[in-house]
Length: 189
Ligand code: IMP
Ligand code: MG
Image (cartoon, rainbow, N blue to C red):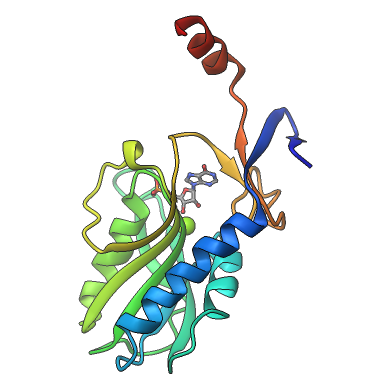
């Protein structure tokens, strides 16, 4: 299905499952080579990562471990301050960690994950994110080593990503059709 509608929003196909699998296979090959003797820990950031993590791990053929964490945000001094990693059930001291993310948008939540990992005295940390919105980035992302696709700063759903809690189950990725922006860009042509 090329177009879908969720509540009040219209979406069109951006990457189909086969395209995604091709990128995931390449990322897997890269990691297998670079981490062959490092026994890495893959750390998936829930909820969005679950589908990417599952497909990526099927491409990893070296000794490794995996775990999932969730970022808990609390209302601190600034609203929505993110302050804790929930669910980390293993010590990460001196381990080579590969953080697995669905998407890096502003980079703020990834930045917070990195801070928390630094406190855990890891040996090294790299990030694998299926999607990156380069022009939306506001934080430092030196550790972003593996990116599936760079996309425009547009809203996407499917393959783990949600809109109002829906669509995480879809095998493809869809982008929001923004009628206003589309009209403007047509006028400029
Ligand atoms: P950040 O702005 O990089 O901190 O992104 C934080 C989180 O916002 C991501 O991990 C996603 O869960 C969510 N997010 C960002 N962009 C999108 C999108 O286009 N669709 C769905 N969720 C998104
Ligand atoms: Mg995420």
